Length: 52
Image 1 (cartoon, helix red, strand yellow):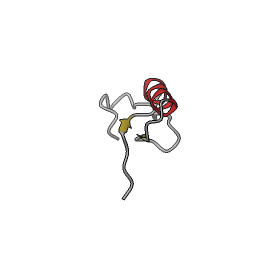
Image 2 (cartoon, helix red, strand yellow; image 1 turned 60 degrees about the vertical axis):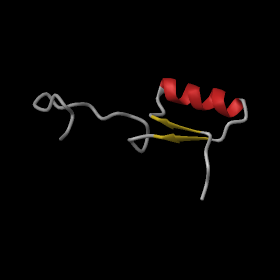
Image 3 (cartoon, helix red, strand yellow; image 1 turned 30 degrees about the vertical axis):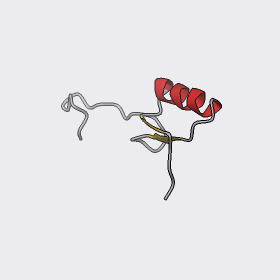
Image 4 (tube, one colour; image 1 turned 180 degrees about the vertical axis):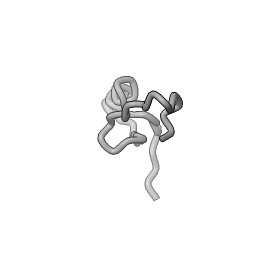
């Protein structure tokens, strides 16, 4: 089983920066992203929560 010093949820601008700086200091870091390509799909006007 792999072990990590930190797990970052959300690899957008802030998350990727956190991952970079932690890894630069020698931490073993795992970044998890909700979407495959890191791009959040646009919300539909009839679905303000973005659940469709």
